[in-house]
Structure formats: structure tokens, C-alpha cells
Amino acid sequence: MFAKGQSIIQLMEELAPKHYAVADDKIGLQLGTLNKDVLNVLIALDVTEEVVDEAIRLQANLIIAHHAIIYRPLSHLQTDTPAGRLYEKLIKHDIAVYIAHTNLDVAEGGVNDMMAEALGLTGLSPLEDIHTDRLKKLVVFIPEDHLDKVRQALFQAGAGWIGQYSHCSFNIEGTGTFVPEAGSEPFIGKQGKLEQVKEVRLETIIPQSIERKAIQAMLKAHPYEEVAYDLYQLDLKGRSFGLGRVGKLDEAVTLQELCERVKQAYDVPVVRLVGDPGKAVRKIAVLGGSGSRYVRHALFAGADVLVTGDIDYHTAQDALAAGLTIIDPGHNVEKILKQGVADYLRRKLQEKKSDTQVIASQINTEPFRFV
Image 1 (cartoon, rainbow, N blue to C red):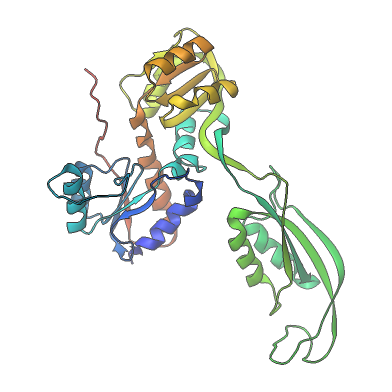
Image 2 (image 1 turned 180 degrees about the vertical axis):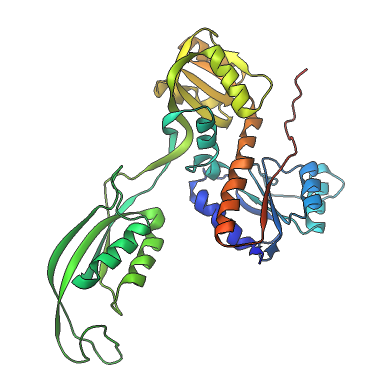
């Protein structure tokens, strides 16, 4: 059985939730419909005409890409323009296009994590915080013989994390009272009779991002027809998500050695270097795409070197004067996402026993040639 487009995108948004995206980023479904069976999914960095031709050959009727095909409102749709020809071909072949851009950059396991891990960086943190997953306290009252079942359901849904500690909760025994009124179907007691039940007040922490999932899991495991529970907003800071990553190598290397590692990890023939090739570096900042405005972020983070694309002349001069080295492997190194996202979706669809196949695009969309 083939997966529906909506189901595939739901899996994609579990990896890269849309609310992670920066303001005004053009993400989501940009063309076509998701209300259909998807035979094959093509994962691409850019949607060029060559990529669309590849999708047609592979019978892929959904493309998930990083870079948008529609950047601003369309004033016309003329099919004798490059963009118009692209849209026409996609529509004629019923190929939908879904974009995951800065939300995939920010996501754990997304573009920047892939880039950092490919270099062997550990102890990762965001280069710039974009989103904090606010924490809430969930309080629920449970008959004592169902405590373990409800508590485990909450933990399995992702509740109970404080920093690096999991399965966090607090439990107080007490007595609950209630009268089942007409029309009720009580798990305990009889209609019209006051009941007193030994219950446990369970308190635990849930990130706002999983609030709905955690509550649904709690309600499903709870035996009561009507569940008494409360949610409180906390001042306690939750996990931060952001653009770029800062991490460390196991051992210091020279900048020249790091350049070679970058070329191999990102499959690029050359890099641009700002700084002394013999300088020893260990703390590395990486950011996929265009990172000129993140020089100050890298300096503030104490990074020895920033690995990013699209560095302009004056930014390079400023970084050099400030003592920050830069390796620019180009914008196209974000292509690392193609295999990473394909592997993720393939694994998720296999778990659901779907016949839909996921394919990483083999088209090279690098516009520059190195001669």
C-alpha cells in the first residue's frame, strides 16, 4: 500500500516542525496536492528542470526540497519563462513540491546537525537560538492501581525530561471524591453515590511541542471517563533550537587539515580559506547555506573557525581582522540533506510497511564550475 502525501509530510514535520522556521520563510506545500497516493518521493536540494525530469523518470509524484520554487507572490504564470516552464511541467505530471528550509536547518537531525556530524564535531549547541520549546507542568489525578500505566504512557510520549534527566515526576497520595451523575458511565462507583477513592497526584514536565501527544497518551491510558488534570506554564527554560551548530573536534588540527576534511565530508573539490593554513583549530562553528551575517555569532561562541558558504569580500576582511578563520565550501554543501532525509523517511515508511519508495536526487545543482 502506498502512503498518502499527507502522511509522508506528517513524518517530515516530525523531523522538521514548521514552527521552527524563521519568519517569512517560504516553506510547506508550494505546488500540487498531497491528497493522493505517492509512488515515489524524490529528495532534492533545489528543484530545477533537470530535477523534475529525474522525478518523471523515477515516477516520483512528490518532491521534498530545501530551496523554494516560489519566493514571492506570482504576478503571472507565463509558461515561456524558465519558472513558468518548471511549474507547467510539474503540473502536467502531477508532481507536488513541498519545501522544508529553515525548519530543517534548525531541527535536531537536520541540515546543520548533518554537517557538524560529518566533520566529527561533538558537544553541539546552536550558533543562534531561534526557538525555545517552552515547558509546562502537567498535573493529573490517577487511581493508585493505574499510576504506573499512566506514568509510563506519559514518559513514552516524551514527558518527564528536565535537562539531561528523563522520567522525572513527583507523586503524592491522597483521596479523590466525586459523584457520578445521570448519564455517566463511571469506572469506579455508582450513579448518585458519593465516592472516595485513593488516588495519586502525578506531576511531570512536558515540552509545549509534545503537549497534544502527551495529553492524548495520558487520556488513553487513564481509566476514568472524565480525567481531572491541570496544565501550568513554567518560567523554567526548555530546550533551545537554532541555526548553525558549534562543537569541538576530539583533537586540534591545522586549518589546512580541516580544509581537507571539509572537502571530503561535503564532497567538494575546493574551498575558500580565510586565515593561516597552519593555525591549530578545535572549536568549530558550521552553518549550511549563506553565513556571512554569522561571523559575530561564531566569535561570541568562541569558535576558532566558521564553516559556511557565500562569504563576501568585506565579511572576510572583517573576520580576518577579528581573528576568526573561515572555510567557505559553498552554498551547495547543503546537498548533504538529500541522503540524510531520504534515509529518515525510508526508515519511517518501512516501519509503517508502506510500498512508497524514497530516493535521493542524483542531479548536481551546483551552479558554479571550478576550472
